Image 1 (cartoon, helix red, strand yellow):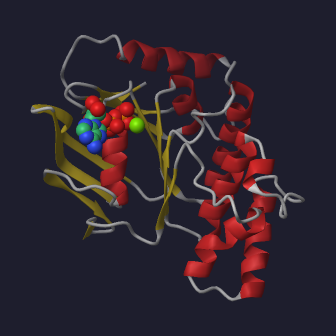
Image 2 (cartoon, rainbow, N blue to C red; image 1 turned 60 degrees about the horizontal axis):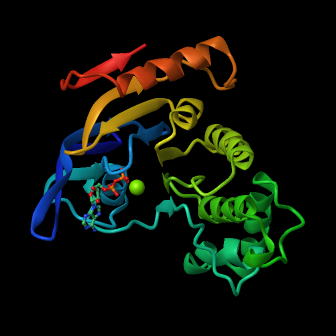
Length: 256
Ligand code: ADP
Ligand code: MG
């Protein structure tokens, strides 16, 4: 298996009280899958993502990618956060070139690659603007272009569209789905929005809080082109919604 999480446990202690953020979480992910981690605030989504990305260590259990234990961030994996993470003193082009500089890609090639990915996210013509001259949605597009430009194997995204208005969010969801299928990347995407997860994911990892755990894993039986208003889409969305009302504590592999 490409990504293997085995019995991941993580406890945070605050004011002398222990809080179990991950309670024996196990998960297998195949190369090229689009996985959404879905659940209410505090269920351990970011904790799990941070362990996968190598930002934080587990108390016990393991995270392996391509058979290698993850103990620190990996240059072939990139993370896109809600707050874009752009450098305000660099223009759009220079922001996208950032990762290519650290990979020592020559200057003319950097420009060519950056232009390609800016085109992919619909920002051709914005190269010389600065982040403050862009909307939130445009800033997140720059951040996505910057991430893709280094040709990562895996993209981790932690509620990347959380700060955007609903219409911009829908546009970016469409873009990231198109990019995911064109570029064939493995994507692990954190969200608390059921519709977003159903629109994006091949499989949805449904998580619950206190202790943070996986409730079920849902394979989304929808094709590449998804229509939020179609009957099959609404059916899947309602099934996931029901999962959050389930009383049973057992782990189930849930196929619709
Ligand atoms: P989510 O991303 O699903 O909202 P998190 O993974 O951020 O949840 O957090 C899971 C739980 O662990 C929450 O209750 C949170 O308060 C707690 N937690 C996360 N990070 C820390 C930390 N650095 N120190 C103390 N508690 C933390
Ligand atoms: Mg979070």
